[in-house]
Image (tube, rainbow, N blue to C red; front, side):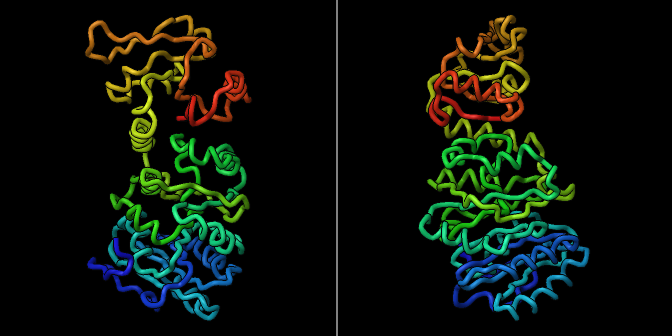
Length: 366
């Protein structure tokens, strides 16, 4: 993708200086019906303490509320502050999706670095400065940050996970149901690296475009880094685009990536959890990877006493029977299908008792 090429779609031309001398950082904002939050979002750009050159590239994906008027109001305010605003969009009655809007905002921008921001979130004043300083020596990285959830009681386990991952776990826990180990609204990376990875998938509503880009980033040797300061107020509300993505779509992409990155390199493995989630993973695997499952393991005596899990859907005769063992009797490596932070520390204690190394002896999947 050439970020400076002319767009051939029917979108309105971008307003602003845009293409010309590149600035240091472009803040990339896709927006759709964001009048409730956009004022606070753009104010947070205005208040950045970044000493370099900064621009905002916003793409209005067919909003039907007062979003366009708010953008016009903020354009003059930001430009008075020395921050150019490039505005693109279309007037179609149907939004073309978050992936499309992000790609358009990137294409019309000129920054050497891209700072992603959702129109319903708020940056802390030091965000661009600190992430820029972190990203410059890390040319193959997506740099994230810690966040504060708004409202605070929303998705407590998810927020705790975002903020508490170790540098090593940013790499190893990429298969969990939480998605990317640094969340999309905190991403900061060089334009050169983004273009190398490729653009976001533009399949419209229901597409996990951030997860698919993150996986491609890792496939191409990308690294993951986090600034360990809270630099974003991450808003939770029912209208967020993430709610449009089905759990099954995310599950299927996660399984595919797990098989590609881990299971193809393992001659055999154990699924930790003989319950619903463990069995679902087993059934979701390719036949070749199902053959590698030597056992399920668990702590539940009722499941262990059953002795076997029978794969009833199999066309094989006799149907495959997979042993169910106590975790202390099972052999690594493990794919762990037990949710983190829900067992009162029991899962973590059991793993610790086996002296296993995450990323070598086991990976978390749930």
